[in-house]
Length: 584
Image 1 (cartoon, rainbow, N blue to C red):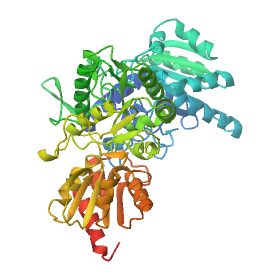
Image 2 (image 1 turned 60 degrees about the vertical axis):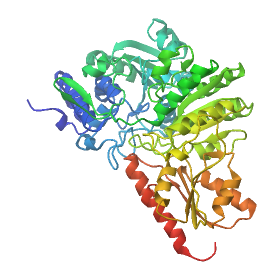
Image 3 (image 1 turned 180 degrees about the vertical axis):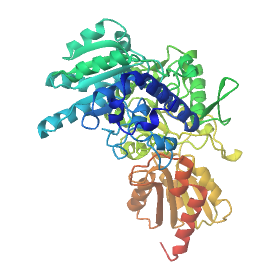
Image 4 (image 1 turned 180 degrees about the horizontal axis):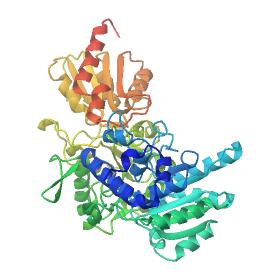
């Protein structure tokens, strides 16, 4: 039998299909998604669960005139396949290929670019108000996962929408999970008859709950919502990972984000690296701290798996808090814990920490509370792309008074820096990348206790050029400098407070290359330049870091090479400085 999917080039082709062929279309979509993620990895579980929902949306609404606004985009692979991108889906999450999330530059059927949860309702309401003011036709639909209901931004959008009485359609894709199982009162409420009262109390017509895998029921509910003249919530119950037995059986994440896999002898086989990661080193160090000190607690906003805290949660269920997709709440919750005398460690990704900037300043740093932020995925993250790159944490946090900001090079550094944060009376932060741990010569390893100041990785007696580095790029700088007698490498370790004496000693040679995996605007390089200017020190300084643009998805190792952040690039930068000649 001829496959249907190759004939689908646009949502209009979905609407033209006989109703009897829609189940076969859904089956083919699942086959393509499972095959695709097996080859290149990706967000498998949520996309499998939303297949019938997306087919029904394109059956009832007319994209792009009707704007479909997907929250995050984890569930939108079927949408991509139905909107003219099927032939390119094999390039998903690869450099120059199909975007990991939704991107209006890629397709006019993608109404909004978003890689963070809880944005859809607010953006969709803005689009609907804009259509109204400009006299443009079309409906607006916000497709929201139930995990996004733990985020305050969704409630701000729902509250505003209910007061406007505009006919915004909110489709609640309820699979009872975010990355892992949802937490809190709202997910529990959605399982009861009180869900209707909850949404109706906010000013919405409530339709549901609807079986999210029943095409007929979905289509009827969506058509009723499309005809409404007031805000509507369509509550669709779906199964994350549906149609893929290993995901259905996975009670932890239901195949949320999987690397490449294959079937062998009827079993799912996934490639796994054997090297320890920074996340695992952090979790190990934190577990040791918690075993020694009952005051130490951990907090994460729905990132137990990514932050390697699942085992720790099992060992200390009352001292590890998953607060859901609620980054602002996570930070201020830590402030409350600290006020009582506990020592909270907030495990959070760099890109998600951006969402809690005011809370870091106002609720933690202003009162000087001893909260330790463990910032994962700092720097380049690879396939998740621009929305998830850990680019701005150093530059945005460096100006905040009283915040100690550190970056480890190795796993031993993670242990030492956690101990350092615990020994401080105020707030601190350590940032580390996604990836496996590098190694340093044994003589450069720190002790297990608190550390202070910068560390010389290589100290030349008569230096001609000096690298000043932050984080694991210190290893690349050491490799670049190793063959050269007159090249020094200083691992800054601390951005705030900056080890001024060590930086001035490094700069005394007159030629400095500052290396960091973050934006050069306001980062470590800026701190070095500010110090040299304040002390009247003249030196040639080259700043290497992430560019003044949003870095797209791709292989992080390739991107480091393209940005000159690998060993060869650092060597080229130092040689170029030396080639300039003359006095600084």
